[in-house]
Length: 200
Ligand code: ATP
Image (cartoon, rainbow, N blue to C red; front, side, top):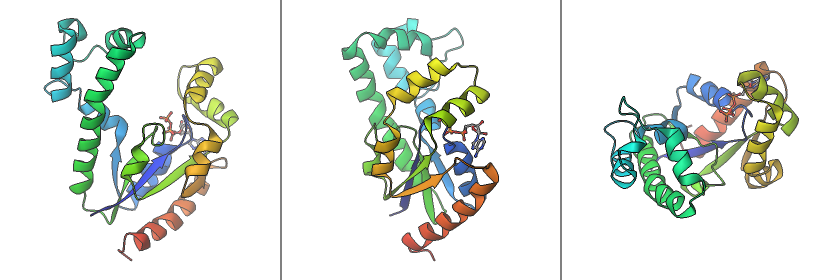
């Protein structure tokens, strides 16, 4: 079966930037955030079950999931949050593995922001952590999104720490320098993964 590299890193670390460089080498990306959105899209089984459980209050007028309402409903209710996670996590896993199986590239990059936190590292053959300091996480995220340092700090603190991620990483890509330095590092890792997957 297909060789899977799990790509992770904290908020604003550069996962998308790095993933796109692998895609440029022809490697298929399986993006956990996109899959998580797909399983609750109109017509999807996940949204149907959420509607059956919480009622139509959970839908927007256009039929899309009302994420704010759902967040509100599960935020202070661990039982409901658990119900939701037990519904969606297996669906997300299954859909990611389906996308892996249908990929035609030598190996696949799974982009998973909470790879270690959600135990998805068990699904992959190798983990790759994009590493930057919390200070750079704050700088780059504030520059990209309409958020302040306090909001970014809250997210950083809710994720596994830099040290925890580094301790669990099989490979690390340092993204503290210029974006232009990434391509060379990605090419070296790409060669390594071609070898590991038995395709070179
Ligand atoms: P998130 O998990 O928050 O979605 P991410 O890990 O996917 O983030 P990116 O979106 O790739 O991170 O990068 C965060 C921001 O930092 C983007 O605006 C990106 O263009 C920028 N960036 C990435 N790498 C560098 C770099 N080496 N130097 C400067 N800016 C960078």
